[in-house]
Image (cartoon, rainbow over all chains, first blue to last red; front, top):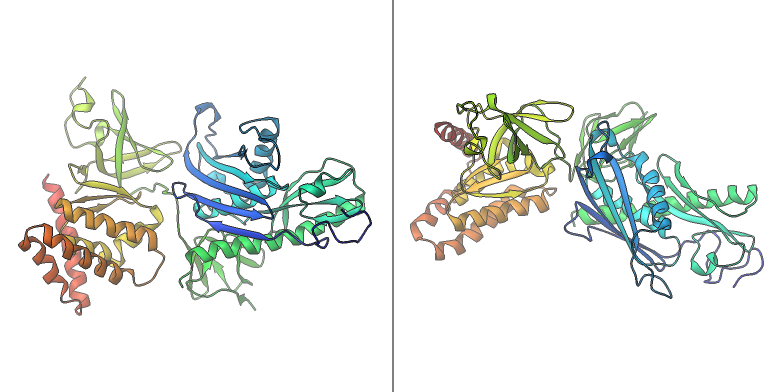
Length: 235
Length: 271
């Protein structure tokens, strides 16, 4: 475990290094679009359904479509005890932030009265799950043929033992006084769509973390792009 | 001066910067953001002079007036039928828009029942519903045959340039086919031949983004039809195979296809 500033992290990464990433498109044949995104030990599988008529009917908006996200950690996903799957206060929050992170890219006015459902299952988790979920969901939406202004890539940045780092894993997140800031952004538009922070961090450190995350998101976007192009490219 | 970053027929991802500068113009699937032209959909790039267009690999059917669609009757009231378009919006078929005379107080299900498929035309697209009509040449209830669903983005590929692809499939399998703009395809013919046609259409749905698909599909059907010949009566399978053996003459074939399409429509009219 690192204790001093500017030393290597516990897994040998530098401050701005990401965990190894992998992405694949079209992993759920029945969905109109689907994707898998893996970063380190965290694996997210996203599947998109719709646009379809939204039920129950009172949720329908006659003016525009509604994006709904369903985040779920499967029971065996954690490192220790069984994770209780299904809705909880935490998943509710994540569903909301995912919707808010993805909605700016979509043109929901095209789908009045409809629901677009994004189901994300985390089959293995090692911190940074909501970021992996957003990254996978963006790929799945692209595959499903939605008009999108831009892709969305997400990563966590934060400070561990006073050192600002990108892409925290579970060990780092559990360090005392560690601050974890999930950040999602549209890499080409250069706009941030999600920024969550709970904990204490200095202004300078926050700025540094956001810069780290911006660079990281661009790297992640490259992985997304490569995976999407790979599926359809003529060999 | 503007700069182009992409090549013709390249796969582009939403957000990709296609070109920069005002020299290039965005068309369907692309948009302008200040100086940049960006892609807004996953698809294949088409460059036409200064115009950049992205042809989507997948899309959701958006009803447009004038489209011929295959719809499924899903609900009815005293005066209208509701039909599913396999889109995110429903179609409405009112009494006035069917060719039959519907008497006062008649049970609508005796004309068009739940689950019936109809070839209909979209007459108007409102905010919530889509108006359909069955009055017009070829519009009717579909009896028998098989239906498959393909992605709406692949409909132009299934039809092909001037109907070349659908003509090939029709010629070689001897099936009657109707392609709805909403991605539903109706096929009717000898059962074995129907299956071949379905496989061919699925092939197009899967590999629709590749070039030179008409030839591939033609060969694919030939191969499949040979197997069918053994099972089916010999004469039936002989006819389409003979037709195939003259692929050199491109233009006359296309014309023949056009005629064939017209024939199908008139056949429907009589019914």
